Length: 217
Image (cartoon, rainbow, N blue to C red; front, side):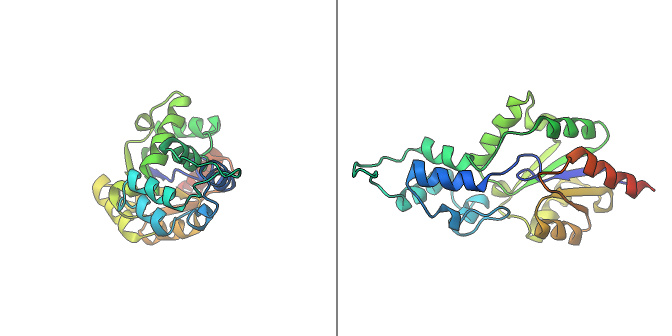
């Protein structure tokens, strides 16, 4: 019997827009190749180090500045601020649809709710604002947050699942894990969790409810 629900954040609760993010880095920051490190599921290079806590937010911003074109199209000096970098990065994250919040609130009444996310401090701070815009603190919905930059490991590394299971005390066989990445879903399944692949275009409440009903038969 399923007693625990573990949710991915980006792509499951918060829709993602990779194109808008890359465009913002090009137009606002003057960094046209950000798409080389921005992936839909797991980042690479210095961005992967950022999401596993091996570099700080100031170090990340300095790397971005070092790759930006420091003159505008008309030859004027370009000053790239922290705010411009943060804005461009957060263009990856869309507003949380109300139906996602409604689904989480309904599930919260019956299940332990955990969050397991590959993220970074800039993005997570913005996601907290997105939750507050819907009237909730993220910690009101989830009992515990497992964030890659705090855990110093990212999905689909098996270690992040082991750490979450050990810290939370959940029983894998009683847990359903929901993610939009096939690799992460397979890693969750290898860790003993029931694992469900979700597309951002699907109905979150309906898809999870259908799975739970099948499991109870």
